[in-house]
Length: 493
Image 1: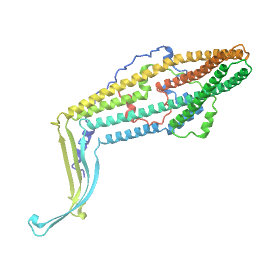
Image 2 (image 1 turned 90 degrees about the vertical axis):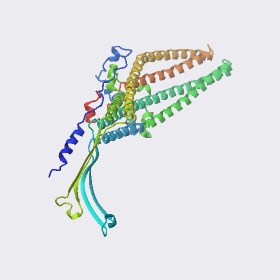
Image 3 (image 1 turned 180 degrees about the vertical axis):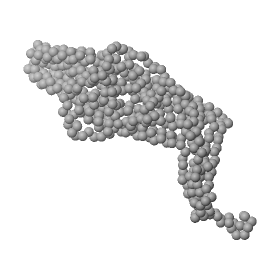
């Protein structure tokens, strides 16, 4: 038999789920940066030889060193910051599901028994009145019909927050990949610097021995011996410095990985030839600044946060309109359990309620102002994210153009210093010159070699920075996919 509540309940359910929305139309803010990079030329916009943009180059295709690949893979599996970001995604997704569930009525099954005793004196009769009642039914309690879209606006806000957390997770992964790659290169560079310093100690130990021998034969002075010893001690200090930095680099890698490095991996690292033996990174095309809107997950996250604030304005607007809620139930009731399912024992309740805001001392207007201001704040944050991304890429592009020339010049300087030191050392050993010129030449060569290592490291790390700035590093990711609703509107437009 059709319940007398079925038709009105069905109509109200349909109306509650298909009400209007007061969320403002969203228009993406204009790009607050130039349309081209400051360096601007064809080189910056050119396509990579493989035809891929940086964001489409997986980190395994970018970091070709197997040791670097294993370090990055371990960090993606164990790093605690990345785990927190993933848990934030799960939490936001659960909150979105909870808010969306408010659109639907909550149906509860109830069963109960009620016994009571009323003294006869209350009823004005002799004896007492004993009653017993059994009930069984289904009920909806205080379900709000979302005619004006308040609940849908809140659900949309939670949905955009969820999408923002997904992109924040991706951004965290990109940063982690870049950090591990850069720290691994720093470890290799400090090992190279340590080897150079150890070579200098060996050479300067030999110089001290020779200078002392020459002083014993009267062809060198005590000042020459002191200068040679000073250079030796300076080189020994460099050995201690780079020994410490190599150990600290390894500690930093262990922290980023989030677990002790396997002994097998450490052995492979120790067997690495050095910074110069690293495979070359792929060529990275910069494209245009507008491309960052879809490449950079931090920009996408900022836009989703802006869309969440926009949805919140819709919820604040809906607070000015009436709120309609419904309580309804239907079932069976009887004073005896044996007749509960008998004829004529049907019971039902239908209780709609409407609440119209009349006076709230300006609270609704204040809440709407707060929502609008929060949206303006998120517009500013979105524009700032774009400007920061533009700055990151521009700096990396400028550095890319100059590092190659600087490294080449420094390599030429090392060659010149090596020739100068070889000639000065020959003159000192032959007695044609004092040790001072040999000392100056040796110090200049050592500093030039260390500076060259530092420049090579900076050039490689700048390429990683550009890769990260262009949105690369997430093509191989385990981030949960967005919902179907998100996939249909990737940019919130």
